[in-house]
Length: 332
Ligand code: AQP
Image (cartoon, rainbow, N blue to C red; front, side):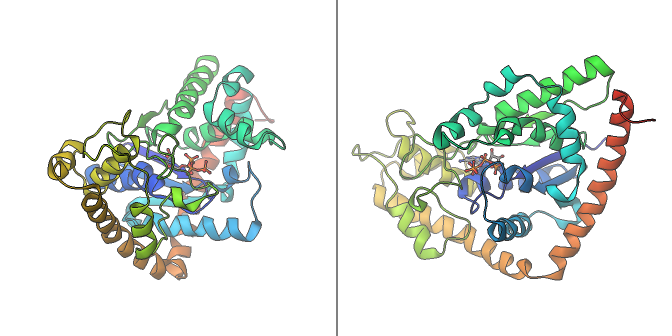
């Protein structure tokens, strides 16, 4: 029987190569390999407002991500594509799951710790309870699998704990999801600080490649990516973290093994390696941008999102009705 795969991206900044390699490219690959399965993909705009967003930018990025999913190769006929805030049951279930989540569990989440250290004042309570809403996004649709990058693994483990806890208390109700983490590219690092994850909400754009960067920007950023003085193409994340990251990016983009890239470039200079990598990125990203341009203003995108809203909305409505019955909320 077919499985259901659910995942989302939050519109907190311009989509990066990290989001593409760690998440979107994985969905596209899964869709090609798993013909039986259903794909529910959403833009997590409710998650974005855990940190302050400019309204017009938030709305634009939300639509950008929806268009980018399709531009990157997701099949529209096989994807239920929707916007999280348009399905009110996410928040409703999120609250119920908060009531099944312990403070200590939320306090242990490294993403919360990292982000709250960066902000240190004005930390919203929703940044803290974010993982319960994320659990709702997944459990609402009885996801079997959730494709994510390494950074989201901890949140997914918490989702599984919450689901098991709920099921143990109220009787079997939620499907307990499994993570799908790519073998190569689960954690793409910053180009300038290769010990830090590449992130879309970063202040400095030299550290990430945006999916919207033009050819000149892509080439410039790869040229100036931090490497080392060892002058040897070798995959060594400890001693050559910048180079290891570039090799990972190259392997992911070309669907090759890391060893194959190392073998091909073992006698090359960093300059040649970087030029070829930049060209591979240009060859991948420019056609995606062209498709994005066609989609972003189209009625087709709006129709796909309307249809996604209808399908996801119906599923969510039924699941929530049953959930409230199980818990004893309301009159019947
Ligand atoms: N650097 C990365 N390498 C591999 N995968 C990554 N992902 C994000 N960054 C990398 C994966 O992209 C998906 C969507 O992520 P998200 O938008 O929900 O949040 P995030 O993980 O917090 O992504 P960012 O870019 O770092 O956003 P900000 O800066 O707002 O926090 C997830 O599957 C994630 O694993």
